[in-house]
Amino acid sequence: MPLSDVLRRSILAIPATSQQQVADAATSTADEVFFDLEDSLAPSEKPAARTELIAAIQDHDWEDTALSYRINGIDTRWWYEDVIEPLSAIGAAVDSLIVPKVQTPSDLRAVETLVASLEQNVGLTPGEIGLSVQIETASGMNSVAEIAQASDRLTALIFGPADYAASIGATVGSDEYPGHYWHYPLSRLSHAAASAGLSTIGGPYGTDDIAAFRSACRNELALGYDGKIVIDAQQVVVANEVFAPTADQAARAEEIVNRYQRAEPTEVAAIDGNVIDREMYRMAKRVLSKAEKAGIR
Image: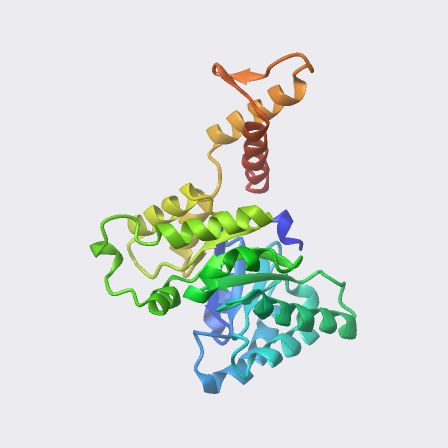
């Protein structure tokens, strides 16, 4: 399905080799499931994992769940076959590839060129498979504005906090930092994504503390994020709630849209004593669209 037609509040990450996690994911309420061929697998597991990925998608009913999988970085020996083997078998069922550790626009274009050639060779609809990129290094962060504009296939920027911390040599934990530990990189990604009309997705948060996870989601929502990588069913529920408008927010957005659209050319639309300008109208339409996709309106 086109990713523009679905919310990406919760993107459930699972190893492509775990049959139990695959079965659980097929019945979850996650907006999107991504199968990992990269960090969750040992080098010896990676070639066989492609076959298991194909079986995971073929053997389960994914209904309205968007499906993605993460290839290995283009600086590895695995990435080329990560694209070719699964897409040749189940490309019509894949909505997006996630490309890790993208550092320059040319990294993204290399994957784009291979995907385009493969679509043509195996009879897939040209341009149907999207690309999402993970920004996980200092070099990638420096180039993020250019990366965001590098491909028409690009659908989202995803922050990778663990590898980013290693890349910049971060030496303290978030609990010791006097402020929002990742405010700068999260904001930079959000700005780059918004300038290109892309979704922005927060990285995984490895904790059993659901209150802390909810707080992390709210911080990212406040910075313009659309969703978050999640790792279990509890996180799915929280992300789906936080990254969707409330019923009251949806109702207010609908009222703003209606008043703006019904205003006569010589009339100034307003709500609660505030003028409804074009930017307020556009923001309200975005909220209303999310509410409709979430089944709230």
